[in-house]
Image 1 (tube, one colour):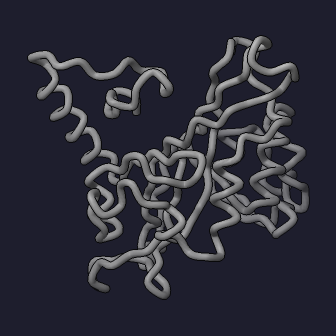
Image 2: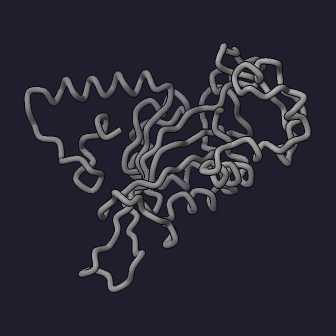
Length: 240
């Protein structure tokens, strides 16, 4: 992302772009990368102001880069998702920076919001009431106050959010191609396994009948339990 957005400045971990003969080619390459993402990149300030959004947003939302840039993202998301967006943009005081971090670090963010979509119905994909569900993934850039600035430990400044937005696939897509390193399972709402295909034995060593009626929590790595619990509670499951 930093490569495609070199003009964000030092606050985002990149030096301001300097005018040089390679500048145009770098920007052109960045534009091609955005096209291949099948999504759009956006940068949002802590107050919700859209600092940057790629031109590819128009492909998914029908809203132009010029129209979106400089306005509040809250103007373009469903009112019921405002609290979700605020939570995403909040740097909680209880967060723990990685041991290798000095004063700046990133906090991963993955969430779903409904954004306005003005595309013609035949091109809009999966929309409801003029809003389109967008899966956003990226990171919150956080600065930790130094001791000479703040007398308290654990004080953070939220610089903003950098994320990539993807449209959900159309509801007409009912099948997912299964590769040789994949298996299918079904689970109840409490993540109790109720079906597994035979390929699970080849990939995990467990027979399907040994796993039925067992909770998925028993078979994931200990370091992933908190992530799974959060995803289970918020219903934001990544692809397995």
